[in-house]
Image 1: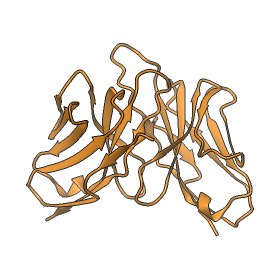
Image 2: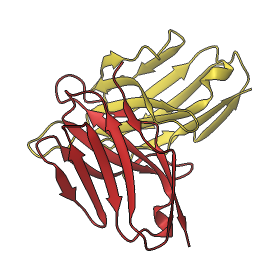
Image 3: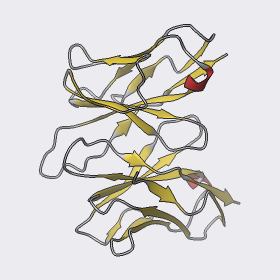
Length: 113
Length: 117
């Protein structure tokens, strides 16, 4: 079946560096994408989203890039902080039908002080 | 705090016992979702309610699982005759009705962790 996946299970960066977390999706019908952050023992927390009619969206210290040609999504975190250490999930949604997100398996971001 | 709340946060049970989890969504949200998450994996969709109607169930939701949302507000997820493979975090999420600027974002609770011995 079609799924959302991530390239790297663990990413380790130095505090202050920029982080890039990648995600590949296979369902060309997906038209909405979200990045979630999940800290240990907590539920996923919304970071940023993007619709398929956009290729870039910026938030506070975060940027999401969408390349529909190669079905690739990335999350860029500027000036990574220790508080950014968590597991990051991308999720996809198809506007038609149910609005239940399909999640990938996640990337763990470790920020070294 | 008016976020999604789940109860209990942790449940340890013996194989074969029944367990029930409760979810209270954000009050104005009419959509409610249950997900299951195992260690190192992303959340997996189980079922979805719009108001009191259960609109979709994943194939992961075996006949030992039942979810209800009788009044369109809180929801319960019951697992009968628990098995060790049911050990996971059960996450509840809610979302608001589609609006022009609706993003489709799901708001998650902190989850109910189930350990089946």
